[in-house]
Amino acid sequence: MSERIRVLVVDDSALMRKLIPAILAREASIEVVGTAMDGAFALKKIEELKPDVVTLDLEMPRMDGMETLRLIMQRAPLPVILFSTHSKEGGYATFKALAIGAVDFLAKPKDAAAGRLDEIADRLIAKIKVAKRAAGRKLPPAVIQETSAPKKGVRAALPPRRVIAVGISTGGPNALQFVLSQIPADFQSAIVIVQHMPEGFTEMFAKRLDECCALEVHEARSGDLLLAGRVLICPGNRHIMVRNMPRGGMVVLSDGPPVNGHRPSADVLFHSVAQEFGLTAVGVLMTGMGDDGAEGLGAIKAAGGMTIAQSEDTCVVSGMPRAAILKGYASKIIPLDGLGSHLVSNYGGERGATDKVEKNEKLEKNGKNEKIEKTSVSSQRS
Image (cartoon, rainbow, N blue to C red; front, side, top):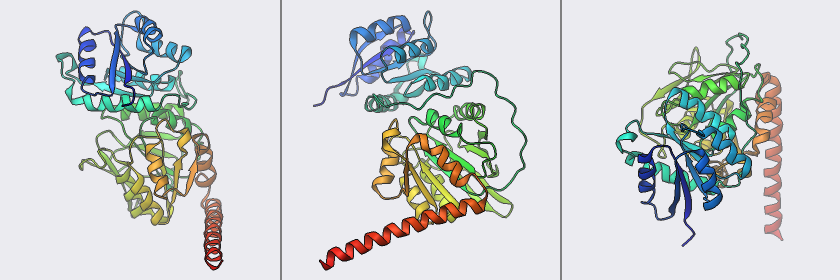
């Protein structure tokens, strides 16, 4: 049996310091090695106990979670999962903490003070396991907007040259900030994103992305048009699909059952993009746990669209892109720091230039296939 994951629980509530270890005790592979009532105690216990993972509350007296996280990342970085109360202010703090270096987050249930943590026990356990596997992974450079963002110019509502669908999960907030911040305001394609995130967080997440990049970013609503330079984030606990209507492409939200255990699901988005846009569809599968989006990426490839997977070595968790790569569904594998420039150079300009680039890509791909076939025939003859 492999060594157990050593966890330090940091929370100012005495009740939480009893309840969180109690629910983690259900998992044989996890051992809670200690608790701390604030950041100052947490830093001392990290030195003494050498935990593998820390669960961290953000709202604490003396030294709050944000300052604690900064010091952890400065002194001896280790995986941190934010486990804090969900509020508007707390939501913005959560995204700032993710930019500093936290691996993931989980909102405490509204009735957590009453001792009801059972509903999130499995999710917390799963996130701790993922955090342990992500230890040592380098996060993308933080894109933190501390001042008010400059006003964006009004641009004409133009149909997109391409519809780019993105599926992403653990490690997504940082990765998306990094990629979108590299795309200019005159980008000629539309982007629709499924980020595995709980209900109530996606609106704040969209606003944060809007502050950090030149594109127009907002949480999607049914009927929103797909426009050049617009980024739509699927709301938490909804599915998002696209429709190619006479007046242009648009998104539709639904309350269908979870797919691959997720709502929203990248597979739902990808399948609809493949069906509605085919040759002008682009699928991008990025960092995340599990295999959501793999089959949908295969559908986009089968429909003649372009498919891209983030390289495994640049993911916080490589499960989602890896699943698609192993099935042969990713036409291109690109590291995180190259994704933004690739999207701009291939799908950001006028259709003529974009089509020329894609035509060359297809000719190159066909040439490789012919070479493989010839090699195979030669081998058989010999």
